[in-house]
Each structure stands twice: as structure tokens, then as C-alpha cells.
Length: 614
Ligand code: ADP
Ligand code: MG
Ligand code: ZN
Image (tube, rainbow, N blue to C red):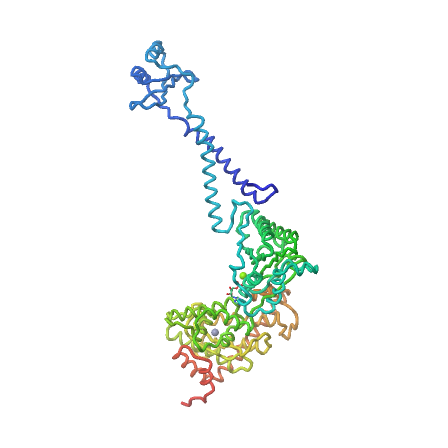
């Protein structure tokens, strides 16, 4: 069962065997002798004599010290047992024993038969450990997809292309990524065409992009289009493995792939094994990952690119990958998979809505416009939530309102219908939300308000003002950003103006405003004092706002001052707008309080009609 090469996968098995042997030896030294020793009962000398006379003694023996007689006798019930008794100076004993027909024995076995004791002390424990080991390994196999008994059989999931059933038609948008992958599909379908001309296709391509943009889906689609087997394994699976198993798994994966060529090998979340090797190796722990990565590199270099094995990998943190992985002949082709734009979002919504019964008047464009920045996975989720909502309400088609509602569900958290707010709290929330909406509406260059609600969400938001841009925004001007900050401060500004004090309700607004202001100064070159100097850099291109400071402590202090000043100015502007429109603030807030949810049109209508004169 063991392979001949110095296989690291053998290590844990060797440990296991050593430990088992150790335990067996301990058992043999201390526990079994006691168990195997037959019970020896002490009897008094006179009882012994009685037993001799009664014919109940079969054999006697003087023990090695000469002070005790060991004898084999029968107990009252007639069962054989071993007894001992102290020797007494008794000259008549010999004659007495002879007359009773007792044999004088050289050795009365106080041990069980050697065969039995061998079975008990060796065979039984080994059998026990084998069974125990199998049970343990079986459990691990179930948990981690690991098959340790077939040393090195990676257990990589083999999904035949017929089963993936995914094609490029299932991936909406992402046209550039699809174009880049079409060449690979062609190569897999007709490898001969490339070989005859001497062209070598890249061995590996790396799909990079934020989570949920369809990287896994695209990889499956490549296999599905080319109708080749799809071997997939996730980087995170390696982490839970025995020492040495990661490398073995990689080796086995490539062995299987070579046999099944042409095929796709897909390594999802490659960053979990492919992190830069020099960083923070610390005390152990990373050895395993490093071994796995080295094995992967070795395999990639070793296999014949002409055979038609294409390795795809996906990651959302390409900057953290070990440069060795990106060298020519490895993952030298990088395919960006970006968040979908307006068109892409509409297409993705339609792909997922195709499986769902829709009412006649669905406007997917509106949904797509309301979901700027959403990933494909979130859009798929929105469509599903809408269907669930329709079912909950006992309808058999999905309506536009279901979709709009689930946009908020996915983006702002679930509506919490049963949260009870006091009347005063509802008033405050209402003024707060109208504060945002009014400030937004009174500024040019800010997205129109489409919906305002004071129905609480499970995410903790008690109210919500939705703004939707007319079209997709990729660039934002300094004015637009400033307006956005001003709009964010509008909520608390309204509370202060009307109730004379502020509540904790603005914490999320404050956080967002601060982040925006900070980014304007440190990353967008929008401050007059610093100009185009990068004071902070994004840690990851795809994973949000995670930044690190790249300036001195003295500058950090100045940045903080400027952030405070910028948000302060915005707040003053919001205060001014609200003071100038206090009548409308009251009118709109009372209206919202009554209706709980109002549309952008209702809002604009009230805002634009002449003031009610009292
Ligand atoms: P990633 O691997 O990039 O994190 P996935 O491929 O796992 O994302 O996508 C998760 C789900 O989101 C997919 O199964 C699919 O339902 C949906 N999805 C994501 N992007 C798209 C897209 N471009 N077109 C259609 N569905 C998509
Ligand atoms: Mg994925
Ligand atoms: Zn707010």
C-alpha cells in the first residue's frame, strides 16, 4: 500500500503506527499480565488436606521459593482452579498425596495458553487499532473530502462536462472574459490545430475579480463549452488537511488530469495556497501551505502543455499571490472578471429570471439601475428573494414590487415589520430620512431620490432613503462627492434643527461620510493642501475600502484635521439647506410618518408644489 518514493503523505501514517505499537507495548508490560494471570486462591493448610482427602486435588507443585504449594484442584462445584497454600512441615503429606492419586507436577500453568495470550496481547489490539483508525479516517473523509486510506488519491471532485451543463450562455455580461476564454475552449476542442503550427497556449489562466462575479461559473462554462472533464479543487480545502496531504493531493490531481486530457483543472481561491512565501513564515504552520504551493509549481512546470490540460485558477486578491505563480509558463494570463455594469446587470437579472414566472409588466432596467455595484451573485439572490416573496404572499407570479423589495432586502437587510418604534422615535426617523432626501434634492449633481421609507430593516436601519443614478457612474467629480457627504450629514442636521438634539441614528451616515472625505483627501487628490499625493493606498483592488497609510505620522494628523474640516463644511451646508426649507421639511416628514413609504415622485410632487399657507 505504501508508495516507494519518499512520499510526505506517509508521515502521518508512520506516526500513527508508532503510537499504536507504543500503546500495545505498554498494555503488554502493565495491563495484560494481570489479566492473563489466572486467579490463584489462597487456602489454609487444613482445607488443603481436606481437599486432598476429598479427591479434589489433581496436581501439586512446590513453588520456586519452597515456601508455598501451588496446586490444581476442583472447587465445590467441580470446576478446576488453581490454589496455593503455605507449606507446613508435614512428613505424612507425601504418602497422603500419593494415596489420593495426586500427581507431583513440575509446572502448573499459572498462565493461560501461549496461543491465547498471544492473541490477546497482540492480535486483538492490532485489530482494534485498525478498526478505530478506519472509523476516524472515514469521519475525516466525510468532513474534509479527504481519502487518506488510498494514500495520495486526491479525491478531487471530478465533474464530467455533461454534468456541469454550464455554458457561456449562463454567464451574462463579462464579454471580455468570455472572449479571452473562447480561445481556451477552441484549444481544448482541437488541440491538434495548435500543435501542428507549433503554437503553445498558456498552461494556466488566472481569473481575477471581486467575490460573486462569476469566476467559478466561467471556469465551469469553459469545461461545459469544450465538453471536457472538469477537475475542481478549492484552495481552502488544502488548509484542513494532514501535514503533507496538500502536496500529495496536488500530485494526484495532476496525475488524474493527465490521464483524462483534454480537461480543465480548476483551482478556486488559489490565494489560500498561493500567498507570497516570504511573508511572516513564523513558527511552523506555513510549511504545509508552502509544500503545497511548491508541488503545484513543480507539477505546472512538469506537464506537457500540448496534451490539452488547461489550468484555471480564481482569486480575488491577485496582489497577494506569490510572483512565482505568475511567471511565464504558469498563470501568465490574467483574465479580469469585473463587477457588471448597467447592461451587464440587466442581462444577469434576465438570465436568472428566465427560470422564474414573471408578471407581464416587469422592468428589469429599473432593477438594474437600482443595483449599481451589485455582483452577479447578489443579483441572482435578488431574483430568488423576489420569487420567495411572491410565494410568501400566495401569488404565482413575481411582480416588479417583489423585485424592488428584494433589492432592498439584499442591499439594506430584511424589512422588519414587527419592530415596534415609539411614536417619538418614528417622528425622529421620519425627519432624519426627509433630511437626507431634501438635502439631496436641493443640490445639483446629486442622484434623484427614488424611495424613502421608515419601515425598519433587520440590518438595524430604521429608515432608508434610496437614491438611484440615471445611468451608471464610473467617475465621480469632486462636487458630486462633496454633495454626497452633504446628503449624508442631512439626516442628523434635520434632527438637530427640529428636535434640538441628536440621536445615535446617524452612526452609519457618519461612517460613510468620513470614509468618503478621507478617500477624497488621501487617495483622490482632491484636497488643495496635499494635491496629488497618495497618502493611503488600497490593500486590495477588489476587496473594498481596506487601506493602509503611506505617509508620516505628522501628515496623518493633518489628514484628520482636513477630514474634520471637510465633513464640517458639508454639515454647515446641509444645515443651511434645511433651515431655508424648514416648511417643506415639516410637510414631507409628516407625510412620510403617515405613509411610512413614499416614492420619489410623491416626494418631488410635494417638494415642488407651492407652500401651504396657514
Ligand atoms: P465567484 O466565483 O466569482 O465568487 P461565482 O461564480 O461563484 O462567483 O458566482 C456565484 C453565483 O452568482 C453563480 O452561481 C451565478 O448564479 C451568479 N452569477 C455571478 N456572476 C454571474 C454572471 N455574470 N451571470 C450569471 N450569473 C452570475
Ligand atoms: Mg467562486
Ligand atoms: Zn441617515
